[in-house]
Length: 269
Ligand SMILES: [Cu+2]
Image 1 (cartoon, rainbow, N blue to C red):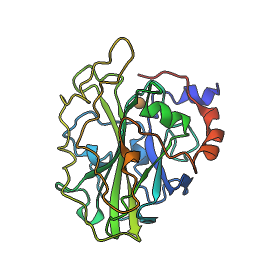
Image 2: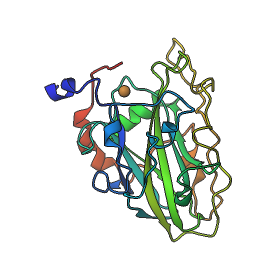
Image 3: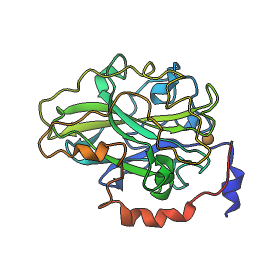
């Protein structure tokens, strides 16, 4: 293993660094809120304003908005370096990934966040969403609801790390936010959503969680509301189904294989 990986252990956790469509990623930081100074941090207080986008600084004025077609596959990437060239997250960090979306004009204030994706424990593969994230070079993808009305949206993705989830306030949240402009959509506004912070409590079963000794986490429940089920024509809601959550493979697989070289083996607290 390169010494560089050991050298930054304990400093870098993970951040949302890139977005794209169909697994084709834009340059790091493009249309992403660049909270690079938060790389060494995570959120444990579910009532903290940091839970929204990683920091209480919610100034989005410097973040441009990237177009994403309604009904298409949006991709996001977590990485331990803002250049996107390290790996996603240490293997010790295990847990689910969720994505919420809100109208950008709200800047995330109020009951505006609608969950559009979640991925937790895969009973078949016996792995966490984070295991898959590491294997896929930090990239994961989900569908933007096809009927969603055109406009600017804030997309919030989070990795929830459960390695200390058996202790109150032990669970670590790694949120990040991107700006998108939905094009070619329908006329359906987002339904009423949840507030972030506010959506979680520290005793939610998916947040205060003791992993079974036998290693089978099939009973794990991802925190937060159910995933929004798209009613749009041509939609594929099963993609967002928790139990069968698999990243869309078609466009992503070949690109990601190259990135597996950096798979981490270092353990970090
Ligand atoms: Cu960490």
